[in-house]
Length: 144
Image: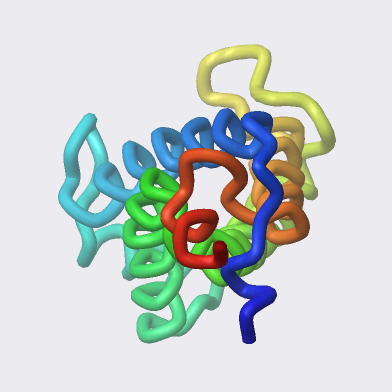
C-alpha cells in the first residue's frame, strides 16, 4: 500500500497538480454551489440524469470526487487515488458529452465542444496517477 503515497521529487508534478486543482475546484463549485454562473447541485444532477443517463448517486459521487479531488491535489495528499477518480470522471464526460462533437473546442457561440480540453485534463490526471504528487506534496512527506 505504500505505492499510493510514493512519488518522485520532481517539480513538474507540482504544476500538473496545481493546474488540475484550480481547474477542478472552479468547475466543481460551479456545478455544486452554482458559483460562477453554474446551475447548482440539484439542477446539475438532474441534467446528467436526464440528458446523459447518469444515475443521481453516481453523479453525486462524481461531484464529490471532483470537489474533494481538487482539494487533495492542492495539498498533494492521496494524489494517486484522486487522480484515478478524476481521470475516470473526465474520461466518462469526454465520451458521454464531447466525443460526438469531434476534437476541437467550440469555435462559435452555441457550438458544443469536442474532446480537445477534456483530453488534456484526462492526460494530466493520468500523469499524476503514474507519477504521484511530486515535490512539495503531503504524499512526499509521508512516504519518506
